View 1 (cartoon, rainbow, N blue to C red):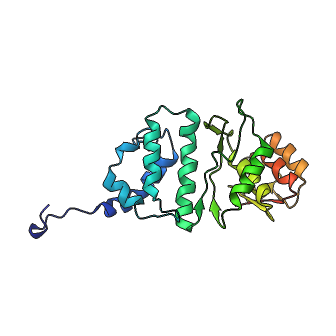
View 2: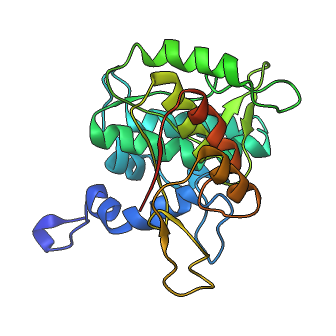
Length: 239
């Protein structure tokens, strides 16, 4: 207010640094409670100086800025979007943030990961769309978990669907290996939440992995095996 009188007002950058983790937590929890307002249910709770301090300086190769993506979400929220759209924005913004941090291109999977009108994944059409798009980028970050239907609406996979996106991308680019990072070190012989220190399975076939995933082993989504298998891409479970 009055610097000469010793009454200082802290800069927006200071407040952004102090609250960045709280903000990111809200961004990633669309319906979070305990007094933290979700950025998706009301993006406008964060004023413009705050957002500019937090995101404004991050510029992408195409000349867009981080704050542009939040403005886009804020406008779309006014149009009564679907639950799938809202649920997908955490994954979307995570990819935007990581792309900005790494200096890579952000490539949205909407329009590339394709579903039919009934919500079934179109594997071959998706493979073609991803391959053609990713040939244009030396390095890219893609959000998992969602794609789009023929009418352009966002469609999400079931829980753990980011595994499927990774497998689809691995197939499309002919990856040497598909590394799936999760909360356990490799594929284990038993659930570590039930059995103490279960032994690790060093190698497993695609068929065995899919059967175990189908039977409830949550380390890897059952539908993520097929695309990698089609291209003979090894799957490496990492932690």
